[in-house]
Amino acid sequence: MFSAHELIVAPATVPGPGVRAIVRLAGDGLDRLLSRLFTAIAPGFAAAGEPARVVGARLARGGLGDAWGAVPVTVLHWPGPGGPIGGPLAEVQLPCSAPLVAAVVAEACRHGARLARGGEFTLRAFLACRLDLLQAEAVLGVVDARTPEELAAALDRMAGGAGVALGTSRAALLDLLADIEAAIDFADETTPDAVPVVDVAAWRAIAARLEAEQRTLAEVEAHLASRGAGSGDLPRVVLVGRPNVGKSSLFNTLVGRDAALVADEAGTTRDWIEARLDADSGPACVLVDLAGVPNGAIEDPLEAAAVAVAREQVARADVVVVCRDATAAADCAWVLPEVSRIDVITRCDRADAGAAGIRTSVRDGTGIGALRSAIATAVAAVPPRESPATLRMAVGVAAARAALAAVLPDVRAAAAGRPADEAVVAADIRRAVDALGEVTGAEIGTDLLDRIFSRHCIGK
Image (tube, rainbow, N blue to C red; front, side):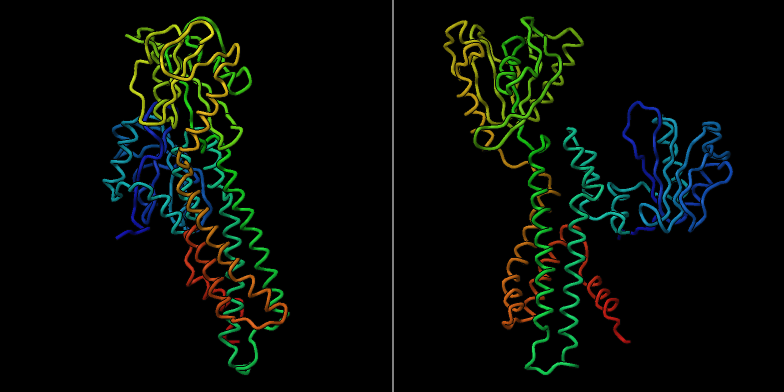
């Protein structure tokens, strides 16, 4: 059984060299644990109910201090009940030493803490309503981001982004639903059965509120669609081949500018470079130019590092364009991933290549159009690369918009004086609220009851 009060501990930084490491601790009894692990320098750790505090401290004698000495640490302490996870939390910054980090975690466990499960700190923040579900998922997106665009999208979700707009829209729909259901629930006290519960003026106001939320959801939907325009979500088309086969020249020709350095010497490209490639028709993609991969053993450390980076990029590819010079007899000497493959013969103006593939020349433009068409066809067959959070958000927004689209004609008709069934209208609005609640992870029952009681002053 999960408990948000158990005392937990875990390293919060990845292993490896650095200046500082962080160990995170949380749960009931945190103040006692901190006093056993560290000796605080004045003013000491914060008391319950006080604001967060940055505390200088040393490893405590009688414990870690005896083995490691008086190592200085910095503790960012939230005593609770506020803070990022809604309860006691501490982040300990200490020298980046893997044995020291392990010793602090082990000592915390010896004093009653347990090792935190994966994502448990984020889960506690979500349960304490410090994060919505989209922001909680964005934490993983930040960790897994592979490009600046992916990181920017994840940080946008962490900061609220579209989730704030959806939460605001859901709140507005809940208010409207509360008003309609309260009118239905208490109509028998004031209204004869033959008289509509909601009058024409009220229906006009309801229609205006629903139309406003429909516009908000359309804006969010457009924002989600625009995320696919960033290179983080676009298919990756990778040019691969042996050194000095004309990949960089082909790359520059395809993207329409001198993005990659070109020279006659092999090994000019040591790293990888990418650029967005827009198709005349169909989806865009990210075109990647890699260092050439030679056949045989690699002795130069710099060349070996470049090849390692190239292999990593190929492993991420959605489409691989295998390039070989018209005068060369060998293909690239590695195993390609199970993705769409396009074979290209470069510099066909220099020799008459007999190998199969699209014959190209950047000098006279031979085959460039055919290669563009082949890339566009391959990219169109690549499944969408939207993140689960973005996809689930898009599905939820679409469902909410569909529910509002279903109810708006009846509401507009009622605003024009024709009768409408308030219960049916409420049911459709509830479907929209439920759809948005699934996106953000919110509950509907308690929220709705609280709104009815607080907004309509039941009992007075």
